[in-house]
Image (tube, rainbow, N blue to C red; front, side, top):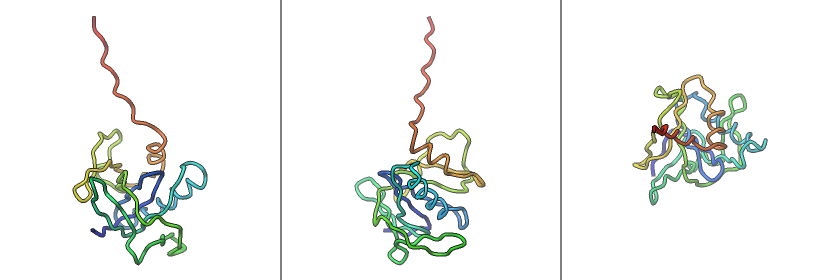
Length: 152
């Protein structure tokens, strides 16, 4: 099991593994997702890990859990560490990379890799609020390819 600098939140049945440099908004995004679930914008969201997460590959899936010392703690800027309900382990369904230099306006699906396992990835450009993209990802389906016109 590897400990990485990341946060994680269970949003519905799968966790979002949130990576990014210090100060990029990982903890703020976790709190915003939990608040979105309380407001009814998501069916469910709960903290898994903040700041440090342990990840491991099991049967082709990536599992994430909090490091023991930080379990149930979330840093809220201006308030400090706060205790919250948390999930002890979750399956990662998407990687969210904040302040990603490779973020594109119309990206091609490019997976992220964690412990040798490919996971869908959302690259968020510096200065962009990730919430609209994450909510849209949770509430919409990817567009079907446009069929080519029939010539005749």
